[in-house]
Image (cartoon, rainbow, N blue to C red):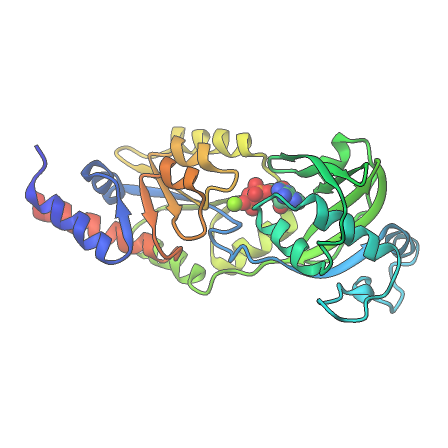
Amino acid sequence: SVPLTFFGGLGGASRRGILVKGSNYLEALAKAGVVVFDKTGTLTKGEFKVVSVVSAAQAGEKDVAPATAAPAGASAAAPAGAAAPAGASDELLHFAAHVESFSNHPIATALREAFSCLDDGCEVADVHEVAGKGVVGTVNGHVVAVGNELLMQERGVACASAHERGTIVHVASDDAYLGYVVIADEPKPDARKAVADIKAEGVRRTVMLTGDRASVAESVASELGIDEVHAELLPQDKVSEVERLISEKGEGETLAFVGDGINDAPVLARADIGIAMGALGSDAAIDAADVVLMDDEPSKIAVAIRVARRTLRIAR
Ligand code: ADP
Ligand code: MG
């Protein structure tokens, strides 16, 4: 039987925008020792903005003379309505935005927003998403691939090594390399506090998992005070990483995974406590999760742990 105080705990949590799906998860939250975060959409806003577009030719020049004064961002993506520099970088963005028409990944949204003429009558077909890598489809009969280095490798496309700070999205048409787009995301305003607060609650180990590049992941993790980071992971790698962390957990400790559900619903299901972002997160995530944060604020994790501990103290 469930002690009455648990109903109080569940109610108290829900008044703070934290939906806990059962009293067993309050018990689990009270024992949280390891908290694992997904990066994009969880600790960062997931609101990517296109910072620059670099054509293959420009990237090639850069590789030859990396010290020249002209920055790679010289051909910054033109906002809607602006006089865009015509040419290769326009074509690149055109292909990328069209093939991302049906994706709800934050990267897809950024590419569509940066390209203002989506209704130009292009025919987009056979689109499929390659989880943790990108998206492939046809635009006016050309096979267009948009995604990270893994996707390009998989298709045998040699891509430029980009050194800009940010997430790099490569674009190829009929397996010919067109260049890359640099996009940037930023931490949520309460992300640093979220990490500090859970540590203050006694969480021993904080970990960040991401499919993004190591350089981006490490800079975000150090900015937020996260102990440990694993980058360039595919969705299934996130599951095995969480399984490894579960096997290393201390006596009586639980592991919580916090994600937005885009590419990480299986991890939410595998963790002792799956915590999902409710506003940005997908329906699949909300289904797979044990705890849902209605307003997507990671700082609510510490609040949930505090409420859970208080409830358990009263119940005993
Ligand atoms: P995270 O682990 O940070 O939440 P994801 O697992 O969703 O990120 O994606 C990992 C990487 O896969 C992204 O950083 C990006 O390089 C690539 N990717 C995934 N989906 C897309 C897409 N629709 N378009 C372009 N790139 C994508
Ligand atoms: Mg994510």
